[in-house]
Length: 117
Length: 113
Image (cartoon, rainbow over all chains, first blue to last red; front, side, top):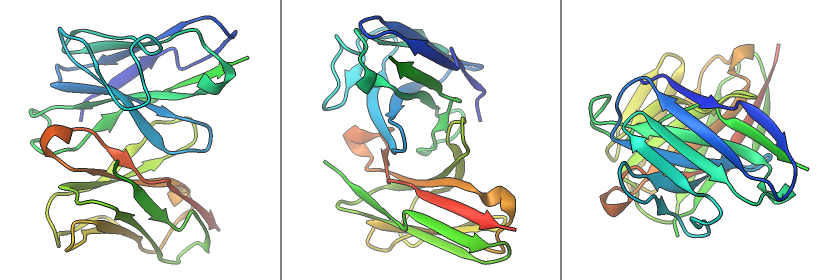
């Protein structure tokens, strides 16, 4: 499996501000994803981060609120814009790559715990 | 959209007991995955299942991909205190949804020594 790191690991932010979360992988991977895990809840897919093109968002998530970048095959960022307390969650990136496995196994980063006051 | 129903929501067991949890889906999946999440950590992949009827073991863990492709279960035998955590099932439908995981609500496991 790949080694995945996220920065920051946690942050406390004021409402109305924005936070950019970084995800770094130790090897090139085909696909990267961003998930949200609200307090005490399960994981929900936000978007697929596409290298060199716009991210593909799931229903209920929009680019203006969660802009995503993926400049290369080892790095992606997720920005949580104009934050409100409802954005308080753990944000996780995950990776999937044919070199790691040919099936649908995904590996997750440690997550970024965000609290919005 | 696809929904996963995971049960039970929580379990309180004694060390040494066996544990069983399951997930059912409203639609067919091509892949079932089982993850464990410890507090403050990301989910860790335990077992992956790729075809209907498949039974796979990983140490004390055993998981099966249901024949209908709409369900899966995870068994943990002879539980130990470090099994404590939240267990999630996740499924993928493949095709245009390749890579996109739908997660169950999670099963919180508590093991009393």
